[in-house]
Each structure stands twice: as structure tokens, then as C-alpha cells.
Length: 477
Ligand SMILES: Cc1cc2nc3c(=O)[nH]c(=O)nc-3n(C[C@H](O)[C@H](O)[C@H](O)COP(=O)(O)OP(=O)(O)OC[C@H]3O[C@@H](n4cnc5c(N)ncnc54)[C@H](O)[C@@H]3O)c2cc1C
Image (cartoon, rainbow, N blue to C red; front, side, top):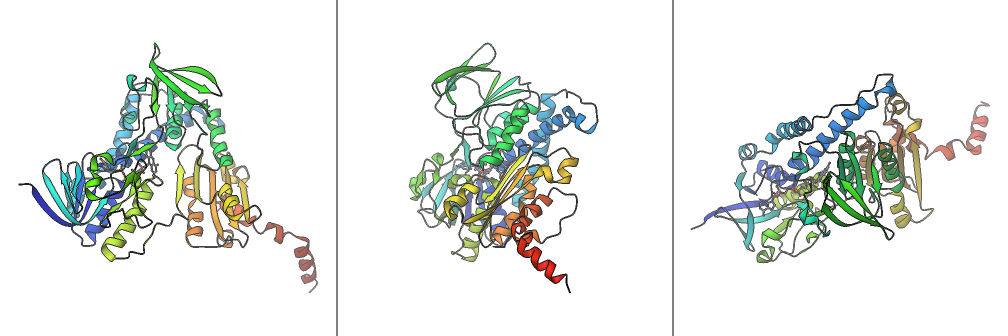
């Protein structure tokens, strides 16, 4: 007879989304069962955000050594010990892991089941270690995995994905990266800075989801560092070669063969829906993921889906945001709580970083119409701190409506991921541009680019003939 557990909330998947629901709900008094089949922490901790940022940090350190002559110091070509770099990456994961551990969650009162779960009825899941869980609500947070495109011969060659690349301890001489989205590009720059030759093959445009002008600044920098970016280029086939891997690519009808030592597939993500037996629970899904409404409800009203498996923007902070919505609905019956992404930011952690929130220039043209918005810009070359640090490749672009309400911002530049926050706050708080222009920023900081961009909203009126006339008049008294 199967072991039956009855609970208020059953969470399937112990990654960013699932852990946030479990920790919050259990500390607020709900009975919570969490089912995780692999490592606690999911993609973000084990094979995503954390190891990728740690590898980038190693790459940035190597780059600083190589480019120290900017500051009058002798440059040093770093000797990269790939096994030690892997050690560094693993040590960062290990330092964070206790926060996501079974022990911590059990300490919070969550019942953790380490097994694979699938639905066996509309109100019940079963696990492959013989347990059955009946719950008032279920939260599916099973995440995503790498999408491997149907490329001829790919199945016969060794390749990395984000699930394996952080285990590499060998020198890489030439990495071919299939896919020029944020994941592919972050990994491309990290490996380039660690000494590998890197070629990125992208069918459309590299960093194509972001503002082209700001993405262009990042791409320019990557090319200067010696990365080869092949855009509008399709991978036709892959095969083993003397050097490692050969990849045949095609652009505008011309084919070329690239010879690399290693291949990284970073060509998108696939939602983890297959093993859940969603039909047994009456939950609709497509190839993109589980179908949800703005409240993250599935076609079975007692089942919610959050994070990557819900098919929207795939970020850890999205999964966390979803978790908050679920807690409000299930515990506090706030069924009006809906996802609102107007102030949802994202960042690509290249150097320079690329950060975005709200409307881009292109969105503004589409939604507010030409002439229906103001575009404010400021270059990092006009920022004293950026000059002091020789980090002047950067631009901030801010969109406001005609009345000055902040609608969006994109920043390419050093620490853009930190600098985006006043704009997130301005959009979330439905503030006008004066809320940022009127702040005092410490000098010299990179964040002054925000003040200068914001201030430029008022420049035409402030420095106009009308103002000059008014001032000359007032000075008479
Ligand atoms: C290389 C890389 C870098 C990234 N960098 C960033 C970044 O810098 N910032 C950012 O915001 N996002 C980043 N992301 C995205 C981020 O990792 C994901 O958006 C986030 O992990 C999604 O959380 P989740 O809870 O939906 O899924 P996950 O964290 O993937 O967790 C899903 C969990 O469900 C478990 N599971 C699946 N099926 C079952 C089942 N049937 N039974 C039991 N358990 C199951 C899995 O084992 C897994 O642990 C990155 C991703 C990658 C790949």
C-alpha cells in the first residue's frame, strides 16, 4: 500500500520557483510537501546563474591581468588552470547550497521528498519511490532543460550544454557556441577571457531580444576581445574531426566548415513537462510549457505552474516573482493577484553588462507611436567614474511618455545590472522622470548616467530662449 501524505500545498521541483513557494508558504503556516528529483536549487544554483556568474568572474579576472596596462601596470598573460577554475566554480555553488538544502527546508517545516513526481489524478501525485501526495493546491515548478536542435550528426559528437560545461576541467582551445542568446554569449565571453578561441553561430542576431543599439555596444566589445560572431548563420551539420569537432554552417547560401576543439549547445530551452503525466490531472500544455493565465492557474484550477515551465521569460527572479503571486492566492485568497511585467528587469552579465526594463525604443514606437514618446540618452564616455576606470563603452536609453512618465530603460555599460534599479522603481511606482532627475547622486559614480539622462528631459525647456528672457527679467529686481 502506497504511503499517502495529505497536505495544503504540494510543490513539484526544488529550483528557484519551487523553493520560494515552499519556504514562504511553510513559514506562513501552510503544510507544504516539496518533491525534487535531482539537486536542490535546480538550474540556477547547479547549472545556471550561479556557475555561469562564477565562470564569468574568473574570465573577468583574467581579462584584468591582460589589460592592466590601461592603468600603467605591466600586463600579464594569465596561466589558466582549468581544473582550478572548475574548483572555484564548484566552491561558489557549495557556499550557496546550504540555503537550498533539504536540511534547511526541513528545518523550515517543509516535508521534502527526494523523488520524481507525476500526476495520477486531478488532486494527487505519485512519486517513483512509492509515495502519494494529495493536496489542496499543487505548484508545478519543474523548470526547463537545454533544447538541442535537430542538427545532422549532432547526436554523434560530444558537446557541452549548461548541464555539463561547468564540469569541464580541460583546456579548451577553440569553443564553437551554437546560439547567441544571453546564455551562449555569457559563456562565450567567459571562455574567450580564459584563453579559448571562441566562435558563436547564431541563426538570427546575437542578443536579438535586446535594444539593437545597446546590444551593439556589447557585440562591439566582444569582437574587440577576439570573439567571432557569425550572425544570420545556420548550423547544417556537425561531425568529429582531427581537431575535435567540425561544424558546417551556411550564410546566404555559402557554406563554411568551422573546426573547433569543443562545442557548446546553447540554442534555447525546453520546458520539463513530459514526465509529469499532465493529462492525468487535466492540465493543458504545449511545446512551450504549461498553459497558464495571468494568475498562473492551469486548466485545473487547483494546479498552478510557475517559473521556466510556465513558458514565459525564463529567469530566476521571474520564478521568484511567480512564487509571491502563488502565496498570495493560495494562502491569503487574493485571487486578483496577477502577473504584471511592466517593471520586470533582465540583465545579461557580459562585460559591459546589458540591462533592460519596460519599453525599449522599438516598443515605444510600436505602442506609443512615432512622436508619442521621449527618448533620453547619455553616454558613459561623459561619466567621470567611467573615464577613471577606462570603462567608457556604454549608453543609457530611457523612454518616457510625452508627459514624462517613465516607461522603460536599457543600459549597456559597466554594472548596468545595478544601474537599472532606479528605473525599475520609477516604472513600478508610476513615477515621472523628475523623480530620478531630482535625486542627488554621489560623485563620481556610474549611476550619475541615470541622473544625466533624466535631466536631459528638461534641457530643451530649461535652456530655451523663453527661460533666458524670464531670467533676464527676474534679475532686474
Ligand atoms: C547557463 C544559465 C545561466 C542563467 N543565468 C541566469 C541569470 O543570471 N539570472 C537569471 O535570473 N536567470 C538565469 N538563468 C535562468 C534560471 O536558471 C532559470 O530561469 C531558473 O532556474 C528557473 O527556475 P525554476 O524554478 O522554474 O526551474 P529550476 O530551477 O530549473 O528547477 C526545476 C527543478 O524541478 C526538478 N524537477 C523537474 N521535473 C521533476 C519531477 N517530475 N519531479 C520532481 N522534480 C522535478 C528539477 O530537477 C529541478 O531541480 C540561467 C540559466 C542558465 C541555463
